[in-house]
Length: 375
Image (tube, rainbow, N blue to C red; front, top):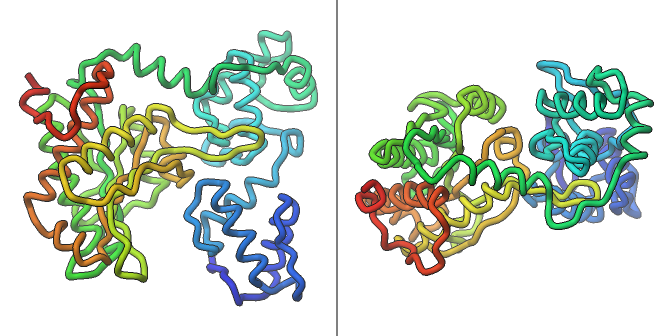
């Protein structure tokens, strides 16, 4: 679709403003109703911040999709599972939250009506004496409303994810870790200082692949050197392989030359009445971020929750690492050095290993080497 930003006008801009207004954001400015003005720009940025999207004031495919999802309320439409055309929206997220609150497991509260959500819904329907048809119609809505209860002590979704990690054991060998080098093929990604994001990401993935293999992990890549699947295809491949983790590798870039450093992202979003996130993804992001900072001189830009499609659509914990700014001369110089790339690769591998080890507060980050862990 066309990208819309400040200064644009037309019927789609009017629709965007109306969607923002229905969400309680000041999309309606003092000017004409079909103009993307300063008020609309601020409203879009506020919406993007709340939903865990890139905050740039630009309404592209991801922001437009999120605006559409946000206006659905539970009961607005009949929900059911349809392979290949799954319902997506805030009404699905509320359904998932209700099921979790009552002890049923629809998986992550991601607003996607998949098979696990259908299974949890059927189980709920059987439990309350309804026909287990996996469809959210009037009778199921009434039962959900009557039996809703308040749960304290943290997010049920996060607790279930943490429990699955604990039950899986502390051995890293035999795990499947999917490595996702960003972009690829004709899509070079960010380019500056004679570096292309797609090439650096693939090289990093290859180095991490070798180190994880030495630990007994089965590493897989989402693409070859010349491929460029979209995020939906990458997520589908990850889900089909049954991977334990997904690690996406990127470089950052901005118009200015000064910004620099490494940041790591995990799934997290603000949904109706609740913030949701991947607890294990957050922990992995923290481990990897700290290992990279400890082993390199990259600036620590910390970890952040995001609702980007790849982090959201994967059923396993997933993180995205932006390993420096290709537009910064210092970061670019680091990224050109093979020894720097080796240090990043080892940091990621150690972060994966530490995810499965018992937490030890006195364990010094950046000092453990792979042979010690492998032994």
